[in-house]
Amino acid sequence: MYDLLLLIIGLVLFVIGLVWLTSSTSSKRFRMFGLVLLILGLWVCKVSLRCSIIECEQPVIHATARQRVGLMNRSQQAYYFEHGKFSDSLQKLGLGFQPTSEQFVYSIRTTTDAAFQYGTTRPDCRLCEVSLYDWLPFWQASWHSGPCLSSIHCKSQSYAGVVYTQRLADEITTKSVLCEAKAPGTVQLNPTYRNGIVNCGPDAKELE
Image (cartoon, rainbow, N blue to C red):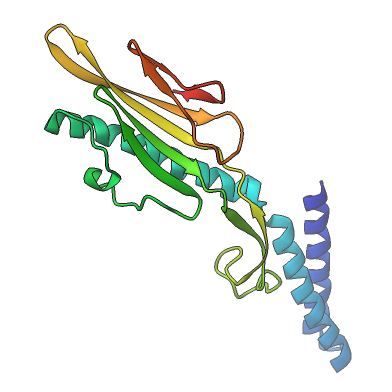
């Protein structure tokens, strides 16, 4: 409701400013006021249409981390079939991304019959809330493209994946599980694998 009200105000200011700016009967002073109202209306419209960090940026960050941990799982399965063991290094999997990003730290832990992949939110992770150029209606190509003036802590869930071996008849196959933290935080998840069963832990849930 608040965003809709802002949008209406912005459109009204824009229309008034456009009329004053283009009217042949307007004085020079009214045209200047019209230009100011036009720019102010554009800015108010932009603010009303801009989605918040939680609504827009955070889901993208979640999706990226979830996809990367899932990719680590699948790569471990392929690595096992090729080498007969799991990789203990992210670099050996050749996934094309670094162990540390702006929001997450990715790591691997292996045992003889399972591999644990982690995507853990960094404790120093922050997202820009207000940038220097947010007030400009035309300049920026994307939100918060200028120097950041105010930031907030990331509200990201950590992820963990488990790949384990399973013997079926005379052959060994692998299965994978992906876990997501139930709440935002920077604590690394601690899934377990015992007796053929993966447990994501009390602080996490298993994803389909």
